[in-house]
Image 1 (cartoon, rainbow, N blue to C red):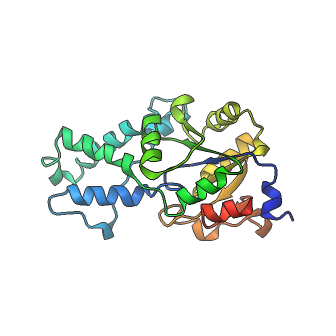
Image 2: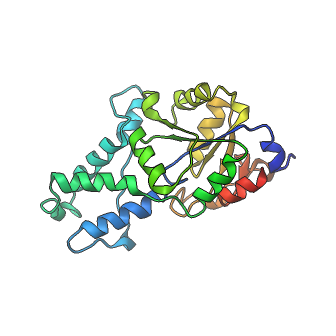
Length: 241
């Protein structure tokens, strides 16, 4: 069985999922909501997070949006109609809700993200491929010191991951075949789609807030699992090069 270094020897571009994989989006929005609520929010009970229902609709031929800011605002508005959160509706007017939505743009990378990306960048192309809209991703990169060579938003493709068009579109713009690209994510569904639809190598990075049910059981193919490589950080990935 090939070693991780051998698996990656022909890879020219590393394609990164962003939300959860590169940035700690869950921790950011939990703190922002807690700070904005008059009586605070009990972080221990968990904070409802946006779903990608509108984006999923696009994947099955329905109506939806590729703009994550719109998804976040719709989710917040819906959240404030529920029994648990409706008492905050009168405190959060349109301006405050817009401020909360834009606070997502300030999410910071996981501690290993900037250093690991800079190290990888010395030997390969590093790009973002995200369900976020372009301005969102640019702001995250500037706020979190994420040194992307390119940023691919699903706005470019008119649909969202895991639609095959997204992964194939990234390969088209990179002018590379799938076997020379590696998808890096903390979500198995993302990696499976990249491998199945675009023939990309797959690298799983476990994160504390992601894939809570599957994270502990993810293994590399060498260990009988479903992904090519499992690493614990971007720095560990960079060391393989």
